[in-house]
Length: 348
Ligand code: ATP
Ligand code: MG
Image 1 (cartoon, rainbow, N blue to C red):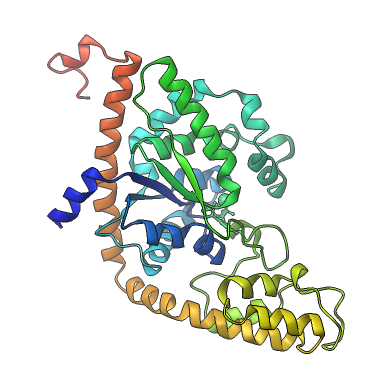
Image 2 (cartoon, protein in one colour; image 1 turned 60 degrees about the horizontal axis):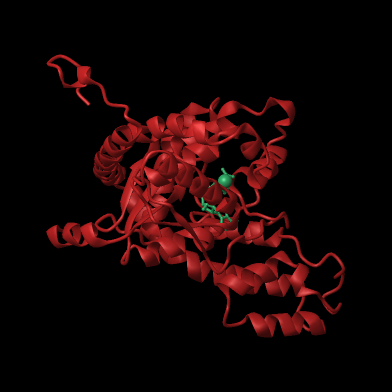
């Protein structure tokens, strides 16, 4: 363990994570989690469970948060995140993130946020119309605080997050140019599958769109979901010639059944495999992929106290990192006052 901490001191850092708005799905796995698991050996990895960001769309359902925080932690651990290497923590318990969010709000214009393409897409999905909250509009600013509070270099994310990383880089550059170079300018790392399509054929599999296969889904749920997935609408009979490139099932074969995918595509184009048979092959492939994750998850879920302990340890480390960053930021911004040093004054 000591060796592990020594190594951390010389490593570059990763910050990435998820909103606790439900369990994680296949899109998370291929878009970000697989990269996290692989990179945790080379990078000092921080995984944020972004409960404050979840509130930007779920503030009126606080009773779900606790279980969803646990779900997201369980999913990450079941996929192979190792608490001896990675620091899993809860966003709302790290005060530096809230402090930096307020400070950074001066470095971004309302126009920039309103023109952010991901904000626009999501606002349309949630039907915000004229009623978008200040918190939702500003979540890329809070995300900049998530990334910079621990001075992360790399952010493994899905494609939808790229405008937010670009925004974060702009804020960091402006801060460093205005005061002094205390913040680290982060870089995004997108995976080989930057955007996994949803079961309904909409562009992105998403927790909030109800079009996801969850890492924790049972074999029966997978069967039901794949059976209802959108296929080539031009194909009526199993012998019709298909167009795999427009088929959701084919998109999943490409990622989760790579060994068989070219054969499946050929048979689909020739009309020698029907959609039902093709879906059965996918169900089997997904089951092979998800079974070990499901087993590890069930084992961990039977010991929730262990998971809360992991989060507590990770959060303690994240808070300490946040305090160090805030000391640098306060010094750079001259937010330092004599009263802080007097007995009985602020303890910061
Ligand atoms: P919500 O709908 O509640 O926003 P989400 O499914 O978009 O949930 P997030 O927690 O917002 O999930 O995203 C966590 C990480 O997973 C981000 O890096 C995001 O880019 C990535 N991700 C989410 N969905 C996909 C997807 N379908 N394909 C690739 N990456 C994804
Ligand atoms: Mg999202």
